[in-house]
Length: 142
Image (tube, rainbow, N blue to C red; front, side, top):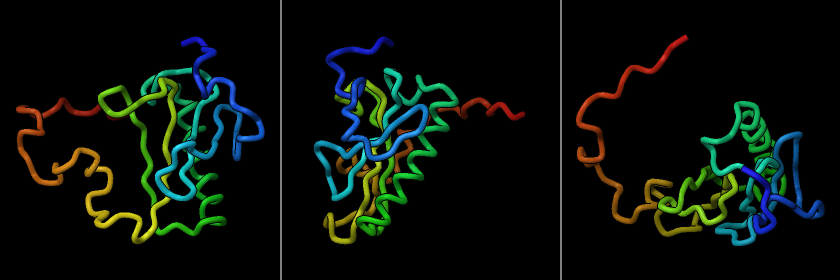
Protein backbone atom coordinates (compact mmCIF):
# COMPACT_ATOMS: atom_id res chain seq x y z
CA UNK A 1 0.00 0.00 0.00
CA UNK A 2 1.13 3.51 -0.73
CA UNK A 3 1.41 6.21 1.90
CA UNK A 4 -1.61 8.45 1.82
CA UNK A 5 -1.88 12.09 2.79
CA UNK A 6 -5.15 11.40 4.59
CA UNK A 7 -3.64 8.66 6.77
CA UNK A 8 -2.87 10.06 10.25
CA UNK A 9 -0.15 7.45 10.82
CA UNK A 10 1.85 7.91 7.60
CA UNK A 11 3.49 11.17 8.67
CA UNK A 12 3.79 11.23 12.45
CA UNK A 13 4.95 14.41 14.15
CA UNK A 14 8.35 13.56 15.59
CA UNK A 15 7.53 15.38 18.83
CA UNK A 16 4.61 12.96 19.39
CA UNK A 17 6.70 9.78 19.04
CA UNK A 18 7.50 8.37 22.47
CA UNK A 19 9.47 5.30 21.32
CA UNK A 20 10.72 3.93 18.03
CA UNK A 21 12.91 1.44 16.29
CA UNK A 22 13.91 1.05 12.64
CA UNK A 23 10.48 -0.19 11.46
CA UNK A 24 7.85 1.18 13.82
CA UNK A 25 7.02 3.84 16.36
CA UNK A 26 4.74 4.42 19.35
CA UNK A 27 2.58 7.31 20.40
CA UNK A 28 -0.15 8.06 22.91
CA UNK A 29 -3.64 7.20 21.66
CA UNK A 30 -5.65 10.35 20.87
CA UNK A 31 -8.79 8.73 22.30
CA UNK A 32 -7.42 6.72 25.25
CA UNK A 33 -9.61 4.26 27.10
CA UNK A 34 -7.27 4.28 30.12
CA UNK A 35 -4.37 6.36 31.39
CA UNK A 36 -1.30 5.49 29.28
CA UNK A 37 -3.11 3.92 26.27
CA UNK A 38 -0.49 3.61 23.50
CA UNK A 39 -0.42 2.75 19.81
CA UNK A 40 2.45 0.86 18.16
CA UNK A 41 2.53 1.58 14.42
CA UNK A 42 4.70 0.45 11.50
CA UNK A 43 6.25 3.29 9.50
CA UNK A 44 5.29 1.52 6.27
CA UNK A 45 1.68 2.10 5.27
CA UNK A 46 0.12 -1.34 5.39
CA UNK A 47 -3.42 -2.38 6.19
CA UNK A 48 -3.21 -4.71 9.18
CA UNK A 49 -1.26 -7.28 11.19
CA UNK A 50 -1.61 -9.91 8.48
CA UNK A 51 0.05 -7.64 5.91
CA UNK A 52 3.14 -7.01 8.05
CA UNK A 53 6.44 -8.59 7.07
CA UNK A 54 8.09 -10.98 9.52
CA UNK A 55 10.62 -8.24 10.32
CA UNK A 56 7.85 -5.73 11.02
CA UNK A 57 6.05 -8.20 13.31
CA UNK A 58 9.28 -8.71 15.23
CA UNK A 59 9.86 -4.95 15.44
CA UNK A 60 6.28 -4.38 16.66
CA UNK A 61 6.72 -6.98 19.41
CA UNK A 62 10.02 -5.45 20.46
CA UNK A 63 8.46 -2.02 20.70
CA UNK A 64 5.53 -3.40 22.73
CA UNK A 65 8.10 -4.59 25.26
CA UNK A 66 9.83 -1.19 25.28
CA UNK A 67 6.49 0.59 25.74
CA UNK A 68 5.52 -1.69 28.60
CA UNK A 69 8.63 -0.46 30.42
CA UNK A 70 7.59 3.17 29.78
CA UNK A 71 4.13 2.43 31.19
CA UNK A 72 5.52 0.59 34.22
CA UNK A 73 7.84 3.49 35.00
CA UNK A 74 5.16 6.17 34.61
CA UNK A 75 1.78 4.65 35.50
CA UNK A 76 2.33 1.34 37.34
CA UNK A 77 -0.65 -0.47 35.74
CA UNK A 78 -2.17 -3.64 37.20
CA UNK A 79 -2.54 -5.41 33.83
CA UNK A 80 -2.73 -4.93 30.07
CA UNK A 81 -4.85 -5.54 27.01
CA UNK A 82 -2.89 -5.83 23.79
CA UNK A 83 -4.53 -6.09 20.41
CA UNK A 84 -5.19 -5.22 16.81
CA UNK A 85 -8.52 -4.26 15.26
CA UNK A 86 -8.46 -5.84 11.80
CA UNK A 87 -11.18 -4.76 9.39
CA UNK A 88 -14.21 -2.55 9.81
CA UNK A 89 -16.26 -5.38 11.34
CA UNK A 90 -13.68 -5.57 14.14
CA UNK A 91 -13.70 -1.82 14.73
CA UNK A 92 -10.70 -0.72 12.65
CA UNK A 93 -11.26 2.92 11.72
CA UNK A 94 -7.76 3.93 10.60
CA UNK A 95 -6.73 1.65 7.75
CA UNK A 96 -3.05 1.65 8.66
CA UNK A 97 -1.91 -1.21 10.88
CA UNK A 98 -1.61 -0.33 14.56
CA UNK A 99 -1.51 -2.23 17.83
CA UNK A 100 -3.22 -0.99 20.99
CA UNK A 101 -1.31 -1.39 24.26
CA UNK A 102 -3.88 -0.58 26.91
CA UNK A 103 -2.79 -0.47 30.54
CA UNK A 104 -5.47 -1.70 32.92
CA UNK A 105 -6.10 -0.71 36.51
CA UNK A 106 -8.15 -2.29 39.24
CA UNK A 107 -11.45 -0.43 39.26
CA UNK A 108 -11.25 0.94 35.70
CA UNK A 109 -14.31 -1.17 34.85
CA UNK A 110 -16.98 -2.79 37.00
CA UNK A 111 -16.15 -6.33 35.87
CA UNK A 112 -12.99 -7.00 33.84
CA UNK A 113 -13.71 -10.76 33.66
CA UNK A 114 -13.41 -11.92 30.08
CA UNK A 115 -11.05 -9.14 29.01
CA UNK A 116 -11.05 -8.91 25.22
CA UNK A 117 -13.78 -11.55 25.03
CA UNK A 118 -16.22 -8.90 26.25
CA UNK A 119 -15.68 -6.85 23.09
CA UNK A 120 -18.83 -8.56 21.78
CA UNK A 121 -21.37 -7.88 24.52
CA UNK A 122 -22.97 -10.90 26.15
CA UNK A 123 -20.70 -13.44 24.43
CA UNK A 124 -18.65 -14.61 27.38
CA UNK A 125 -19.99 -18.13 27.46
CA UNK A 126 -19.31 -21.51 25.93
CA UNK A 127 -21.03 -21.88 22.55
CA UNK A 128 -20.24 -24.86 20.31
CA UNK A 129 -21.64 -22.95 17.32
CA UNK A 130 -18.51 -20.78 17.43
CA UNK A 131 -16.32 -23.68 16.29
CA UNK A 132 -15.96 -25.13 12.82
CA UNK A 133 -17.89 -28.35 12.16
CA UNK A 134 -14.66 -30.21 11.33
CA UNK A 135 -11.21 -30.11 12.81
CA UNK A 136 -8.84 -27.67 11.11
CA UNK A 137 -5.93 -29.11 9.15
CA UNK A 138 -2.81 -29.90 11.11
CA UNK A 139 -0.40 -27.00 11.45
CA UNK A 140 2.81 -27.19 9.47
CA UNK A 141 5.68 -28.15 11.73
CA UNK A 142 9.32 -27.67 10.82
